Image (cartoon, rainbow, N blue to C red; front, side, top):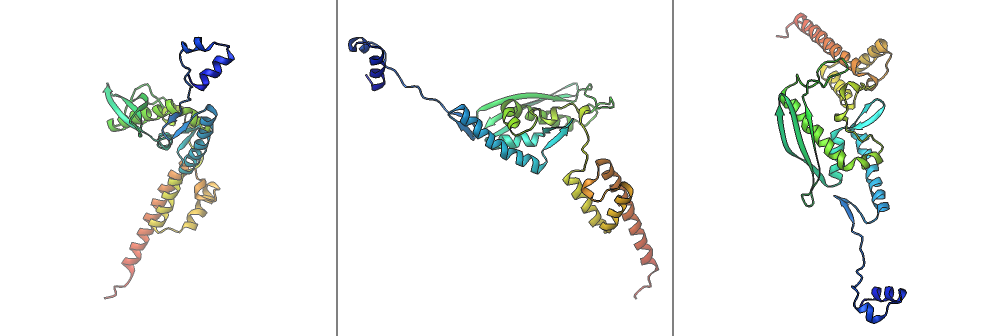
Length: 265
């Protein structure tokens, strides 16, 4: 008879002869909860650890621009969800992708790398003719097969991550529905160009041999914008065309000058 059993018997005034016939009391141990790299033995510890992880996740999502603003709310792209999965020691694995009448349906599992256990599974489709944009035109049904297949897999991946880790994404301050699952007609165009678009503009100006200050003076006069990163996506497209036109003019002028220059030989 162990010490815990004796103490319980004494508190209940059970005679030793009677207690000998009773089963021994086995101490209960609390099993830790493990989600990949996130583990804890109490609910409060689990939430604390998850909040710390969520804070680091939010930094990466903001730094790498892995979210999309839809109706004033931040929805994380699938790259942000898979980043969370990797932080927790999990990876996505395609189970199957099938096509029916042009509509692709993909199934994806979320696998824990430490032991290969499946912790989440989801399916999603792409290519349905009733998936329309805000103008009532089909979004995916007319696109190439590879694009529909890829988007179905992307949506399934984001959904599998959401089913397992939406509570952590909420702690990070984002909406729990992946951006790829949101209806396209509800998307709002970003107010400013992305970092990659800005880099493209700078590269085009440099490669074309154009005067950057003259370009900035032109956008200031045209749109009252002082800096390239403040351009809207529509202005970005217009400026790309304008850069190509200016570059063609410069090349033409250079060709004329070369033709008029005296031959050095």
